[in-house]
Length: 541
Image (cartoon, rainbow, N blue to C red; front, side):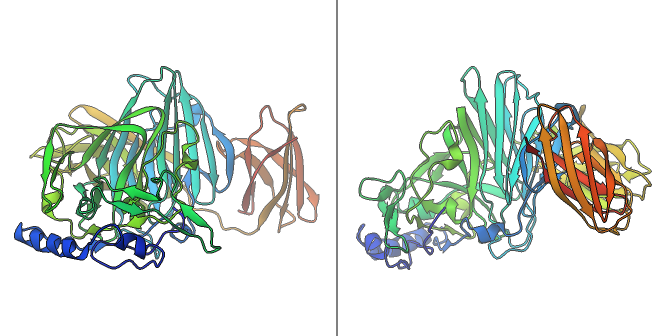
């Protein structure tokens, strides 16, 4: 969001001089807020002291960027062939990572890594925010090549199948950044998405928001150049009417907060009403504590927002079924009401799931797709619900235990949705793929780990000056340099690793080749026998 004000809470004076008179003009607050605190104490509820959280900001994305299927850096319409796609693949950033089911674009273990950043909201703790985000395509599957577009801290991946297309958009930011999944069906029917929070998280009715239900709060301001602005979708007078808000949080960080973010989507009520106490606006919220389900229209999207954006009072998203990321920028100044920490038990939504103790094994995922031999990787066995009282025992096996070994089993404890285990590897002399398998109650899930030999010492520096594909001639021109004048330079398709040819040594550290290539490889990598390498997007002539 743009032009955020300082935190404005209902029991503190407004800090922004532009917003202060507007907030004070809504209706007398001090007496009512004092009553809220006293009445809350009388009810045995903790007084709702608000906490701030980091808002969306470029500083939160400092150094961010994703790697996926051995691709990283700038990618423009890069294609990964369907035949090269594993059943699941990791999208790994500095601050954000998640695993994607290739056939459905279902997501597992959407995680904030906790890497140090001034706007980190995890308290430096690796946090699985969503155990899973799964769409029900009712039999349809994705079968096409995977398209990857990435630039800086952002990535977009998309794939299609008969009657179905899916797109995932993400930013790699310590405070969550943009994340959304878009679905489109040829039959124009809706798709049900099921979100299951990580084990340490819970949904709650935000009392700081409920305290203000029905009030009209300003969503406007003045830019530094003196231009007046109003939030897109605000009331005619530049205000926004407050409605109830369900957030999610944890007990580990007083900055951690988020909420589901639907566009052209409707939440499915599960039939578990929660009575929410409040001195002025008591109410009922039909919602589970760890699960939310949404009916998303074809062309709509489902995502989440985190940090201050999750507690700002801004207009609801407008209907959008195309290029939705460009919609609903808050150009004005929205009031941020914060949240109480710790969250009072009385507003935490219950039960966690509609059928506790019935979770089945749905995925085995890895924290990395490859590792140098001798290193370790973290694995995670995940259920589609919570484990029963006795827990769920997952038997683990390795196709090559000499190279990559796993414990005999991992137990997902009662009430949990996942459990970690460690893969230990040994040194190898060549790339060795190992299939890791988890089995529970007859359900089998696999993941593939690449164990790499030690990287050779790098003795040169490589740069690619030119990559030009001539469509009519089906030729690829590559010009590159090395700091060494006597190395072998090979060129390959970045997305697949397929070698296209060898560059001729032109002397003086210059290397060049014109290769016959049937299709534009989009992005190529030049590797030197001296260990250096460089990647460059291909221009089309």
